[in-house]
Image 1: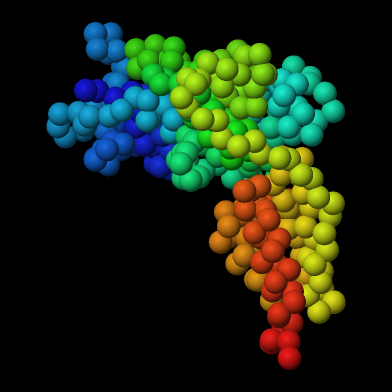
Image 2 (image 1 turned 90 degrees about the horizontal axis):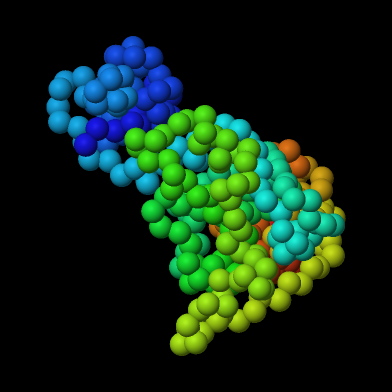
Length: 300
């Protein structure tokens, strides 16, 4: 089958309508990486074809659509979302304002394994909030997946792109749907109790235990007079920061954070740790503070 997607010279996924016609597009096949040309004929429509005239490689439109949405989010650095009272409450916002922009994505990861779930995208905002994003084309989040997000305490947003088939793909319309508009977006979790997907679950499917939200004050952990600050976000994630620069202490914190899914926020110079690893990271830092003197070897 012909594909409407290819990789440009910067290894970015692009739609055929976004590039120059013919070999001047300087694109490669997503599957085999062979050079491809952009064709825009009136009979077969816009598509990519192998420059060598090889038969087109098989491609999965839904998979490529996920990839394309990720590119849009990374490039924009922002994402406008609907804001419900349930989501506002979970994120610690004062009130629902109809829509909210999640700004400055610190990281955007694709297909991250989080135990028994694997969201299409996992983004971290400059506020340290982790949000799962599901890009839906032919399959949508069901009650079981919503329950898994609830169990993890991970807000999950679903974007319905089912209307953008290969034959009806408008890059600008897709960009608006992914970045600017809230019309095709819904929160899988948290959701209102009256319309919660759990209400329709079979009685034979046991609900996971409720996750208690405990918000702890800032904790300062002393390493021989040098401090590490640990602050907890309303979402349950924590931000770990070395208060005064110390290369050994920075290295220790980085090692612990990376081992537990932490992501560095260069703007605030913090390591943001997901809520399900927060207690473990706190415990490890306290344990190391008691048994190690940074730059001086083990405490005697």
